[in-house]
Image (cartoon, rainbow, N blue to C red; front, side, top):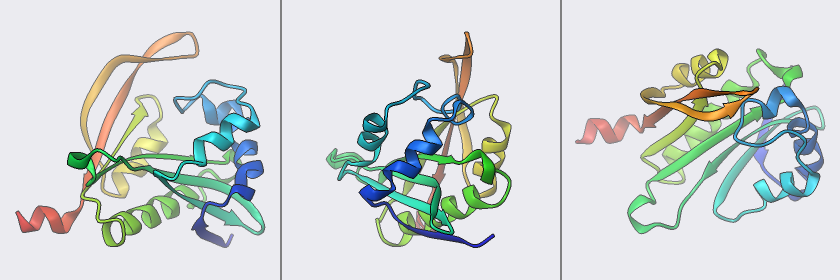
Length: 167
């Protein structure tokens, strides 16, 4: 399977809606199930976000978004979100998206810190984030509601390696 990564375009909203309409995707995000196509489009049509998409053939099968801030003291930080179509789970799409987002963050966006939150029961995502250099910073106990109960969120971050070495 050949995966190509490129910057998000508004024309990708249909494929992204196809991803976010699936319960097995939204159950692992902060979004509610059954999002409208307008809501999905609003997630990505923001100039403060930096979104890359993964294509297989002519179809977008995943995205990674860096949520940038205009806060003067936090411009070195981005919050990261990712989603991959379930048909492509375990095929390297998520890893490839994460590596490309990290390359952009380190070498083009001048970011020092990437951070994310992940459901504690999402073991595959936790393993992926760990493989690409994220470390656990803490646990937010009973912080989100999923499938009728409160669950923990894992806080993870990645500090750019050359920044740590320069301290």
